[in-house]
Image (tube, rainbow, N blue to C red):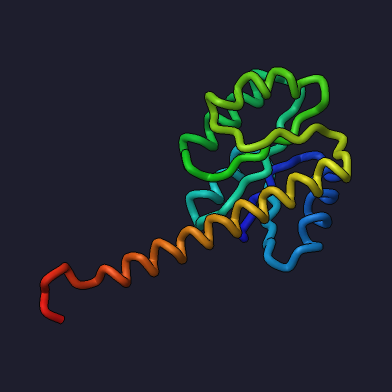
Length: 145
């Protein structure tokens, strides 16, 4: 699973990166700021962990920029405790998958990673079932094959 980690706070970035590296299926690319978000244009990612500051307006612009690049990617917003409530109000509007408060609580982080892994496994199982169903319907009824 390819994860783009956009965070300027080195402590938070290192905590998330090291935590994800505990699972071999995660490949983490670390970047900073708007320029880092442009990595989404260069290659596909399965999820983005986006660090936003207490400045709600700036965080909103970062999310809008990300969504202008890729509407469907799983987005986890990492935000200081003070701004979590504001971000939670924007969750449906920007299709934010989850919000993680900083400083990172290890238990919350690993719960989130477990949910992300479970979701990917379900997506893979659904994709395999659809592929098998499509392969089983390769010939129309009555084709005589």
